[in-house]
Length: 466
Image (cartoon, rainbow, N blue to C red; front, top):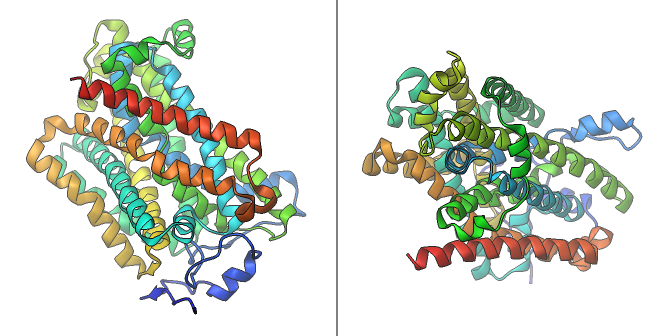
């Protein structure tokens, strides 16, 4: 039966490669598309040069970028809410959860990059090719819920930052945050590298802000080091477990697995098995280094909450706005609160930008629909900003941080539906060829999935017991 062509409404600003050209870039025998499809993110596909004959440094720089776009999702406002509350209430205890979650994230993102490099398919396309249409649609809906939950945290975080800095109402802040759609369109039309440079600049801003805060907070580093060791108390204490699951959901982001498998394909690496293995080496180096920065930021937020609030007897700092108001008086530094809010704004804008890209990848991958760039952005933004506006309208501004934490718990429950297909595909030699997971890697991958399911099950049991 002849496969049907994709719904091609508009190619976008630049002419993407044809399906035949895309197929020529990747050897047969991996994923067999059900329909004649364009590559993931066709307007940016294989647009960044990569030469196998270049020096090691040039290769590292050529692949530097996708990991930082992924890392943005691991330091979004959802992390702020869970980390601040965890630090103020339980001190340094939950630092072990951040470290464990970050290590899981590094491992899973390496698998995501491997899928994109080995098969030329992003995770959404791979699910559509492998599963039945009904299963693919269920996975698509679940992924859209995860993206909506993530966008809710990001949009509300940016709106809170604008309110703290300029006194704007939260609803006005939500509408201003929607302008990230224009930023994405402007930057993507000038090359994918410009998007990456913009994101890295904002990440550097966030890191500098927290280095400043920690300098004046003077944490108890010995206690912080002890917090890296996991404690059984986390599983027994319902409130601590709830925040721990929120940290897990805020750190390991399901939509980032879809995003990473797509954006690694913006590099024009060779198509031979050796070239792909080399490309994977540099892609994993890039993502691991970038997620190391994300680990620093997440740990810094929790350590700041512990040092500035928990140590001073302030154990119930649950709202981001409360943290903003208390930082300057507690630390005795007039700029502390302003620097905190600036970092929050940079984090929110960064995350909404990459969340918009992830929404495009998921919609195009699962549904095989190609829309005009501005129309794709409008749909994704509507899905993101409508819930935020409704939350502010019905729940009020005082519930923002609680809703951000709830959104991260929802994200955690969505994780298995992205992780299990990813592990299944990357362990399949028929699809991955020589880049398929080894038995050891596959075993570790299933262990990570089991740990996430266990934590989710523990939380659900606590909730049902009331």
